[in-house]
Every structure is written in C-alpha cells, then in structure tokens.
Image 1 (cartoon, rainbow over the protein chains, first blue to last red):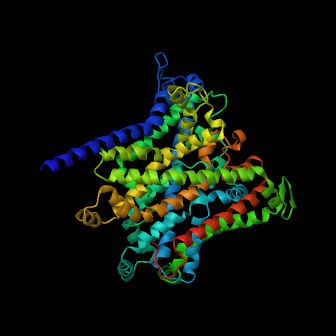
Image 2 (tube, one colour; image 1 turned 30 degrees about the vertical axis):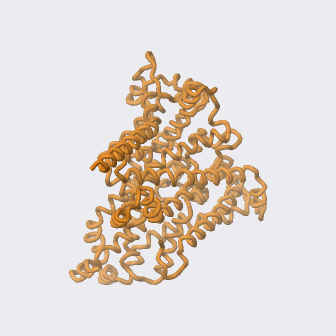
Image 3 (cartoon, chains in turn purple, brown; image 1 turned 120 degrees about the vertical axis):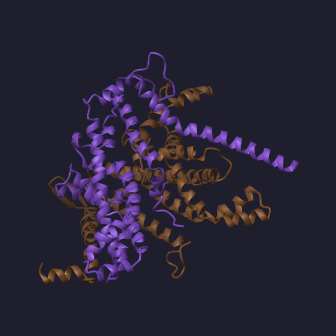
Length: 284
Length: 302
C-alpha cells in the first residue's frame, strides 16, 4: 500500500513538471500572436522604431489602426473578399474536376490506364516552382495574366486530390454501379446521382486541405496579379511592406485581423481540420 | 436525343476516357507544353522581339555563377536543419501529448496547431519585426535581459538562419505533431499491455515499441520535409522583405529562379536553371522511391 502511494506521488509530480514545461512552451508559441495583437494597438511609427515586442506602454495605446482598417478607405477589405472569393471558386472548380477524373481511374479498366495514372504521379513529383516560369509565359500568351482564370486554371489538377478521391471511390462497393446500370442510369448519371452524394465526407476533408493551400497561396498569385484591386490578401499585405514603413498601421492590424476568420473556422471544425490536413498521410 | 448519343452515354468502354479527358487536356496545356518550351528556351537568349540560339552557353554560365551555388547551399542547409529540428521535437511532443503525463492536452494541441493556420506572409512579417535590428524589438530585449548588446539579427548568416529556423519550427511543429499522432493511433494498445506485463518502464516502451512503430509516419514526414525545405521561398522572401538579402543569406533555389526569370527577365537562362532543378527533383524522387522499396515487386511499402 505504501509503495503504491509513492508511485502515485511520483506520477503526479511528473505530471506537474511536464505540464509546467508545456505551459512555458505554449507561451513561447503564443508570443508571436501576443506581440502582434499588442502592437495592433500601437501607433505605426512606434512599430517602425521598436519592431514587435511584448510591451504596451501608457500613452501608446490607440485604436487608430483598427479604425483605419474598418474605415473603408483602404484596399484591405477588397483584398480580403477577393481572397474569400478566389478560395471558394478555386476549391469548387478544382475539387469537381479532380473528383470526375479520379472516378474514371477508380471505377474503370481501360487501355493505357497505368500510363495515364503515371502522369498523375509525375505531377506530384515535380514541384510547381520548377515549371513556374514557363507556366507564367504560357499564361501571358493565353492573355490570362491579371485574372482569376490565370491563377486557377493551371492548378485545377491537383495530384494528391485525385489520389485521395481515387482511394475513396475504390472503397465504395462496386455493386452500386451495377445496381444503377440495371436501373437504366447512364454512366455519368451514376457518378453524379449516386456517387457524388456518397462522397460528402471525402469532399469536406479535401475542402479543408485545398482551402488552406489556396488561402495561403503566395508565389503564383504574386506573379499573375497586377492590379491592386484584384490582389488577394497575402499579396496585398506584402505590398504594404515598404522600407519607409508608412503603412505599418494597416499592415499590423490587417495581419492580426486576417488570422481571426481561420481561427474561428478551426475552433468550430477542429476535428475536420486535423483529419482534412492529414488526409494525405499514412493510412491506418 | 439521337440513339448514337444515347449509346455513347451508356458505353462503359468510352466512359473512362471521358472521365479522364479534363486531366489529359489540362496536363498537356499546363504541364507538357511548358516543360517542352523550357527545354527549348534553355538553349536560347530571349530578348524583347528577338531570340538567339546559344547552345549550351546558359548551362555554362549557370555552373560558374556563384549566386547559384550560394542558393543551392542555402536551400540544402535549410532543409537539413529543418529535418534535424522538425522530426525529433514534434515526435517527442506528440508522444508526451498522447500519454498521461500532461493535463489539458486539447489546449496544448490547439496552441501548437494554430501557427500552421497562419499564412506565411503574416508569420514572416511578425518574425521580421520580432527580430528587428533596433534595441526595442522583442529578441533584442531578450538579449538585453541577459546583458547582451542589441544585434542586427537578419544581417548575418548565423543569426539570420536562427530567425528563419525558428519561423519554420513555429509554423511546422503543430503540423508534424498531428502526423505523428496519426502514427501513434495506429500502434495497437495490446503491445503496450504486453510490455506492462513484462515489466517494461515508460522509456523502454518508447524505445522498443513507439519509436520503431512510428517509422511509417517518420518516413512520410521526412519525405515532405525534404521537398518543403528545398522549395522554400516565401519564408525567406517575407523575412528579408524581398528577394535581396545582405550577402545573399536568404537566397534560396526558388528565389534564384524567381530573380533570374521575373526580376531580371532572363527567361532563357532561367529555363536552364529550371531544367537543372527538374533533373535534381527527379533524382531525389527516384532515390526516395528506391529507399521506400517501391521497385521491389511483390513487397508492400512498409
């Protein structure tokens, strides 16, 4: 009995120590957020002079940055809603087409199937950055520079999304297809009317991983977009960074605000977020 | 509806080609064509309105360009250091968060994961200002606390890379923790029960059960980290607010490509750079597939 108590005390002190270490670590992880949140209440000129830190001295506190952000006099909310719009359109188009293609690979046997599927894997193997310059030239020659089409079209095909849907469809019972065929549904009717409604869990997982990727996309939109009123949020925020620092008020409040919607989405859909973002990893 | 069209809709032989048709179309326009045109452009000098055939001159220039080698070195160093930091730390954190050693797991999980959701642009801006050169910036205040003079963090290699790596650790730890969680969930609990019966201690269980059985997750994380490390661009672009950093300390492979192609508009030369990178990527892929046993027929992976 005494031994058992010693064991218990040992266990609890270990838990205490580890938990305290984790609290310190968690604080360090939150420092960047705390410092930007505090700085959003400081005048921009103080940020130029001091950078970010964890102090908010008396007399420094101001709501001007936030007032400016919501005043409607800046481009911020144009970029913000562009980002939301582009994310919706790109995810919707890309998921629909990837599902369509994946269905062909999953449910049929056809000549050169393995060759075509090898091409899908090839896309996965070659990082986009390597072909970004010829792609850029291609988009210019198709007169799609400075348009959403130019951002979206080259990235409709996403190899890992096709891969994921293919695996998902292969797990569905093939007898569904035969049942549909006996009832006289066309091959495409089977896909649209039987399979798509069954794919809601797969689609929601892919919405999150693709949505995150598109929302945070930087390099390609930076190359394609030219007009400030077409910018998406990351590109717009990037233009606020000038050596003269005259936009720091908007930059800091704007950066701070841009974290909030994703944070809310994450808190609401926590489980889906994690499973969506790991959907490409090792399967159990 | 004509009967020919109707029979087409019901044809099981034609359907697969219709389904994969959008893929083939987009693949040709946005993948095959650009790659072919890169190959051609890499032998040319492209000036406005005129194109000159150069032969292999672009490639010769490439291998003698110091900046190119600096870029390669920087990207490789970054990749290796992120592997060293971002495999063990998240793995240990995931194991502890999965055990009974911590109270409030859900909270800590959330805290580590939120940086993953933050865009690189925002994260890079925050880190650049935290590592500012003026005495008032956060990191210089930390130094001052330990009695050190303020330093220009982003102006030299060692301290600049510290900032870059802390940014990477901050943004990726949570993601890798989640990958290791998935791996930990796949370890059957019977193994631990059996170990308990044999009287194994916590660390022994970690060493002989957890560590070996996390290998698939580790392989996956290593694979994505190698590519993510080598293709890093935005982090350094944000940290040094642009593609030009003092003594090129922030120049990565992709940064070099961007500079040649977009900033200096030397498409021919940049194409040669792109092709060399393409070959390197394929070599990496093939060796990765070989290591994971892809070519051994009949063997399943892992």
